[in-house]
View 1 (cartoon, one colour):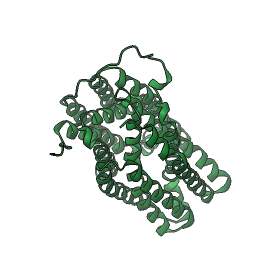
View 2: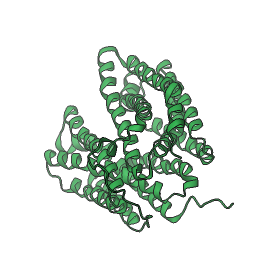
View 3: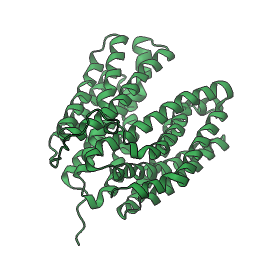
Length: 392
């Protein structure tokens, strides 16, 4: 039997549109603290407060977006969310006060969170069912490539031109290109299931996937501790003033490599085995980071965590999708991303508290222990729960 085509034109388009979401987002993100400081003379506390608003609205928007893409036309929901995502970049160009910039940045989180849920759900819709798990793995490459390329491009523009408006304009154009690409996608007709209670909890959160969500939160928490305090730890403890960019480059290399390798096992339906491998690799990376307070541990952990997470995320996303009926794919995707966001947020808060009271070592051991507990919970309960309740 001839294998169904994975890289069909519609899948390529939503793949590119997702790349543009994260490229436009990441090209400005590393420069926003500097922009607020240079333009509005904002202090560190104010910068943190302004930037946190984006995360909060993105988190709140994800469950609502999951409900909307399951209940209405996915094409319409995607294009509306994507339009507001790209249009709000124009607000960065006209914000003349710090208050106005804070409002625009906070508002921007909602369409960002909604667009990522809608786009990933539409990507699943246009994939052939026989290659869905494999396609989910490759879809994540668009995030990884954009995340590794965009900060470099943004910093290069800033170094050469020194004009933030040019960077905001590039982000606006990239997001607009993504919107135009998505407008040309032909989505399959989706049946709307009638007589469903529109305010029931399971329309916003995939209850069946609660245990998988706990594992994703543990992974997100550990990751949040490391990436948030990585730069200041490298500078204060290891004397590395320019190692953060290289750390993320090494991490992304691991992510890309593991997604390419993992796609083959996902193609054969080995979802559980993919996650098994990923979480065991990843927990070793956090252990190495906590144990070795030197450049070897610093960069070694990056490649190991990248290799682990590159297996975990597409595998876990496939688990969520396979636990949900077809009319709850959006809810499945939003639940995954919401649990990740919650874990990241908890990691930032508790990691900061651990550093404040006990130092960096305590924070990184805390990240490892939480990750280890998630691994234990996964092997004792979650993988069997998935096998028992999967729908396909």
